[in-house]
Image 1 (cartoon, protein in one colour):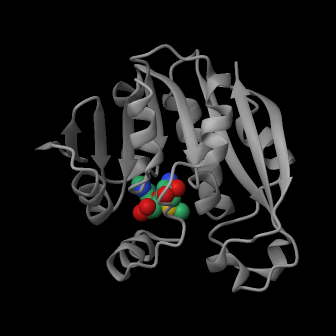
Image 2 (image 1 turned 180 degrees about the vertical axis):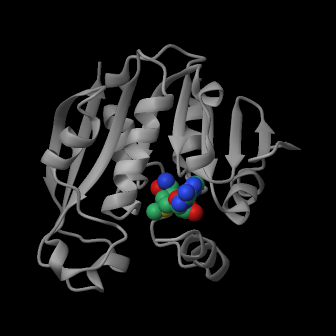
Length: 217
Ligand SMILES: C[S@@+](CC[C@H](N)C(=O)[O-])C[C@H]1O[C@@H](n2cnc3c(N)ncnc32)[C@H](O)[C@@H]1O
């Protein structure tokens, strides 16, 4: 999955992953992070996810990073949120009230941008990446996140040979392996999905399961 793949997805509107309502499993499990109002939630590969609006409405601050300027602009415009833009050498930075979205490449993040983050919300970020990039992605988080940090991570599990990602199937053992240097994994729920999302069902999967992962240290 190179950058062109994602730029093209946004340009052509092939964004089946985008949801119009906050993810129910987010609203069900977010409290396990035990955050305080005003804490900063980092949302990697955030797209224009409505989940960020939900987080704002709960009183948290949001820091997103997203490759596509189309997605970033759409998030602010579609939710009638004011924003200002600044630029630095790596990112175009969209500043709204209690929310900042860094428009650019996740792999260009630096320590200072994540130093005040209290938690990570990963929805369709790790699973958007092929195996080798998943390693780089997890290692980048491990290297850049502050020492005390928690993460809510949604993954999916399906027979990978039946479909090319994204989204990719990510096993529990892979999650453990990717994050073992910083986190302990607790699986909060494993759900066998009967109503496979249409953009995925079309690819002919025999099974599709969603896993809710809590990572802490
Ligand atoms: C599967 S989508 C999920 C978006 C969002 N999390 C959601 O659930 O709606 C993956 C997103 O990652 C973005 N992305 C892919 N590679 C990226 C990178 N290297 N840096 C920043 N964003 C990236 C894509 O543009 C896309 O919006």
